[in-house]
Image: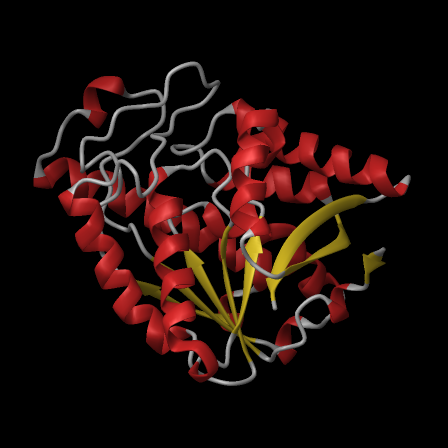
Length: 275
């Protein structure tokens, strides 16, 4: 069934762990927009933590993306940060969130190669092929995760990792493993968002891998109505140096898939609640 937005995440404190500068609206933009539209945003304390915040990436700039110099990192990181802040201000309001930077080097700076055969650029990876730097990042995130997932009345939101973007997987696995080790001392509730455009462009093999991860956990699927065009427009309008047309396609495709399930006239977004 489709839940009312007020019932999706009952916790008052929300920590959103964003791998990159566009991942908050891509994974949770529909939910946050619905909170704001229904005047529920002020009842939440929203803390956004950007994890892989050192970047040299700009879309459609192959030569520049091979540049690992400080000047290039300053250029790309500054642009991406401001694009993110401007979008979040529009999405949930400048006064309604705090923003932190964790400062890890994103995949391009770690010279990860793109996964072949995809309509947009990303490097695939998992624990089977993490390199030494990936494991060091995983360990640092896992250490900080114990602080994020300890408080009560707190929801920790992070991407599911469909298609296994390596940065998303490092973050996801570090938090899940920290939660497992904390056991009863981990009071926060973890929610996985369907990272876009990955879920909207995923094939059967992609979903089999994602579902194998979910089936190893005890989770609840939560679906809710969103304005999918507003979500797609926000991503397209604000992240001009980061996204391609396939991002809009992915957002709308996944909403249509879930919309078809319920035969509703609204867009639909999904999160997975870790029990």
